Amino acid sequence: MKHYFKILCSAIILPLFINCGVNTADGGGVIVNNPAIAGCIRFPEGQSAYGAMAVIGRQGYSGAIDTNFEANHEGFSISYNIKALDTAYCDVQGNFFFEDLFPGDYVLVAQSKETGMLALANVSCGYNETLNVDMTLETPAELKIKPYYYNHGDSSNFVAAQIAGTGFTVDADSSSGILKFDMVPAGELEIVLFRKNNTKEVFYNFKTASGENSTLLVDPHRSNSFWTAIEPGPRDPLGRPFILSSSPSDGAQGTMVNQDRNRSFDIEIQFSHPMDSKFTNPAINVKSSDSLTVLDSIWWQGGNVAYLKLCTIDGSGQCVRGDSLYRSGITYSVIIDTNATTSLGVRFPYPDTLTFVPKP
Image 1 (spheres, one colour):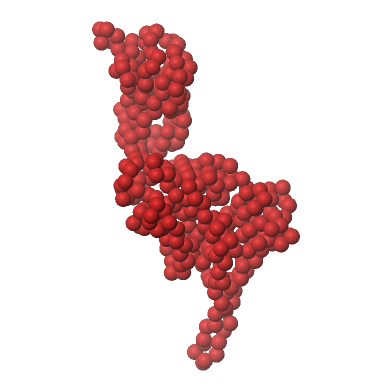
Image 2 (tube, helix red, strand yellow):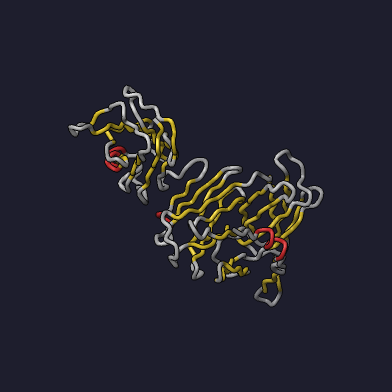
């Protein structure tokens, strides 16, 4: 995958706008000064970030002031909308300055070349205003954009992504459709996703945190209201639910499993949101590749943690908890369908499945 942030920041340095004059009715004029932004970039310990780079771009993807960057992706061209990108470097006190801007909303990204640390600020400024912005560099976040389903060759697949208002871009992996940003600034991001035909979808207000991994689950065939944002920190109560963690963990191979017949549960699932058990219990099913293990019962703790108790179908067709609840070489699956619903009525957008192969 190719990352174009450094290329764009060093190659595109644009003068933005000149001061404007507004004529009065008697033919006179009133001088209106364009906005300016004065900023300071520091390291977490408080030292000034001498030589750090500050990049400014117009916030949001839509708008009339565009600067396009063309990049070739496997024989076709993607046009990235950079929106008046400009660059400044910090003096010994860590200060930078942008002047003669146009009123509006901007994205500021700070980067230390020596440490790789980043900072993000979303700002708004108007005429006759000098905005002061302090930015503290942080460890970058990681962002993965993953399709719910991926059909190779589908013209609707997302093939590239951009963090709007910045030069951060990435290509999709051709075998999986996954788009991975190894480093993005922590903060609130607007993510633009490109299809091969250059049509786009935008996901707004995606949150990242310093040093944390975030995931956006997407579907190029459905609106972003069906997408799932797996973000660090507090979650939107009306956001799409997802499986936060499980024990055994999804995809575990040869993991040791406690199969005490007297234990009250066999599988623990933690959901991202409090769930409505009336709708969610019937949405959970358990299968084994030998068709012998089934779900016996479910109980909840705190609304968002489900405990599943399993049993084995014996020779008479009865469901019992025998010594062979988990068997070597058998794949166990927990399937959660789209009837799984939060306490506020938000459903799973797609079925989800946990699989594991235990080691008894």
